[in-house]
Length: 340
Image (tube, rainbow, N blue to C red; front, side):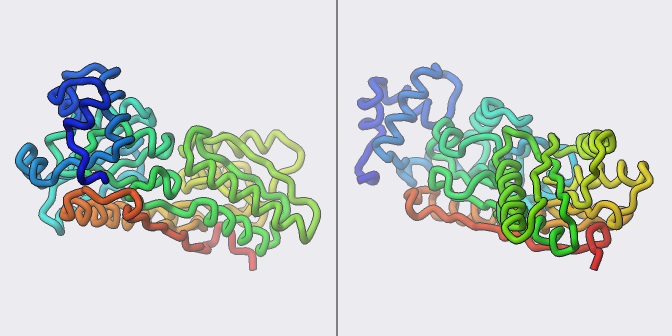
């Protein structure tokens, strides 16, 4: 049915001119937000797919890929960009990178500004519902989501099994003899952080079925070293220190490890520590940090390859055929948690 739907049909359904419908669908600025919303809603309801030949005439190939990330600071995002860049160079492509600062509207503005300048978009928006984001982007621009929650809006995506990885982290700490396991969580608005928190809580429930004493102990964090450090300082004011710590990412695990060492506590003797992501610096920390290896570099590279394949097919896949790749994190045991 989608193949028979024309731009004229979308314009009629939205009650606008064909020119206005075209501007809205292509993400141009010279259209009001109210008109854009109506046109995109009509396009979604009618399952409108821009004609490939018409699209290639209107928008010639730029050999450039747009990349929108929540931030561009830090080793995690540096590795993501490096993976994308390596994949792009292998395909003779260039990348255009923008940060959304964790704001959905900024991501939308950045994406629209790239329309006509890029052949497709790689978007990491773990703070947003993918369906809501995709509904506000140019319809004819191929899109691959990185991160977030798998299966959202049936979009092509590459996501990490954050819940499964967190569950594995707790199981590992339990196997090492830890019974009072604390968790430094990521931002509440971050869907991946919430999946990791859920995995932590499920891990405690699983352990508690066999033995009493596994009570949740969650400290706030925002994925930075500073909040990992602050979490330990908060714990030091309490009577009962945990003997195991799962940080929702490696940067917080590094900050927490520094605070533990400054307090004169042994890692892993007093507190066993494990993070998440396996950014390169974790293996050079003192002691080296145990973690869940998500393959950050490979996430960037594989996402680029997925998008390139989508562009070559014209970017007109139906939702039911959209590819979704799930990355299963690998437990990497290092000195920070190895007690046995």
